[in-house]
Length: 138
Image (tube, rainbow, N blue to C red; front, top):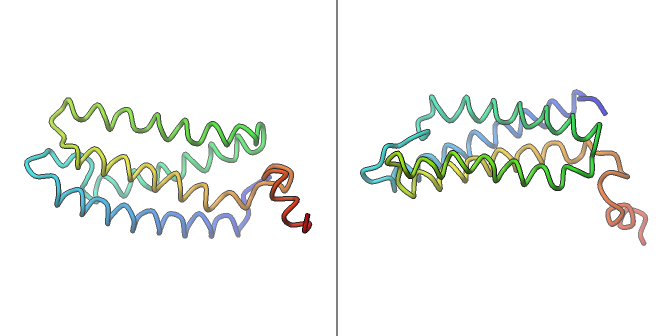
């Protein structure tokens, strides 16, 4: 499985959707971040990180899909949880709960965008027997 023009278009739309969603989240978190440090909530910070996160996630997806496609079901949620650790550590640096939850939601948005964009790239055998049965009318 290699990236195709269709995949690139899906990733472009995923990036656009993630950027819009993360902007909404940042605005809400900033509004609720009374007296906080607003860490990672400015567009100059979160928009490049959204793009880099999407790119790194796509690379990881393609590597796993090629070598161990069944591992995606475990690795994707595990990596998402790992990205939340630095967010939670910000609580010790003066970030408010609103700030931290906002950042955690932003990570969830990027992960969801990657999965939504790249799930169609998996081979039918890799998407699970249930899906194959459904497509065959069983």
